[in-house]
Image (cartoon, rainbow, N blue to C red; front, side, top):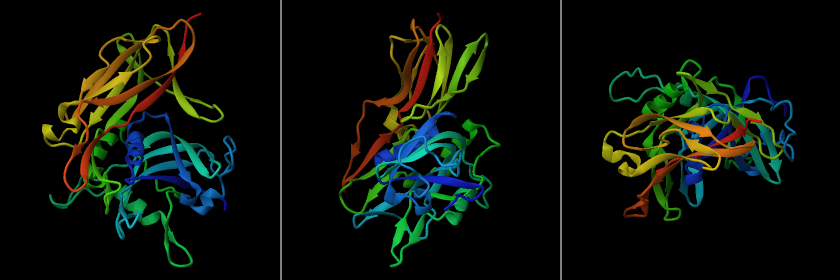
Length: 354
């Protein structure tokens, strides 16, 4: 079935496991131009979408080329061994927009590579009264207009986690990325939904203290100014990715923003024991200043300076990760709390002077 004009690819990740929730936190954290990778078994794809995918990479059909993408988070619970969203609910939440780069089957598993770009329009902060939450038009539109569920000939519900639908124009094009990111945490994030919930004891119920971090990009120091660097898409056959190109001897700054859903210091993820830091190969990258900070505030902003020092062209990775001295907090009734923070990998290509 051909894709109609102005269609969009909706990729869903859910609360069924820690890894799936992390995919969504990562989608919020990645800088523009980075490539994210989602994968699904064939049975979780809408049939019209599955019919357009071919075996092997670099064979994307014209109908899917540069297709808009929306990353969606789904809150669901396990009942009788099956993960299902609540009936008659609005548990599908749009998070981040993007552009499809490649999609294909490798055996019976579908792989989707897409470039992240705009954040989703935040909720309208105008409230009829103090009790009601902000109206999130993007979320309502997604739940009303996109069919993530169909019924088979026997009337049994079938849920899709990757499907095509009309382009709803969800991108927050009028806001800066940092503003849209912060508005999501303040007004759109529902703490009660970002958890893994089971009606039984396996898997255990888990609630997450989410570290919402935004890596806003890489900047070149030039005099007293910082110039934003745009990542380049690298087309390796089996692994599309984007990388930043750095020159040896020049100073670059990584902009890192945190914005957390906490009212008191005791509610901070890690309760003061978590540190966000930059990890890299010390043989080719040197610090030009601090490259870590303790998560001790509900919001923060840091520019981490680095300089490349290698003598020949190199490829490597910068990784932003969270370390904590505390572990999971157990409690009664098979319920526990875990700190949840994405590891953001920024591929780099260093150009040495000849």
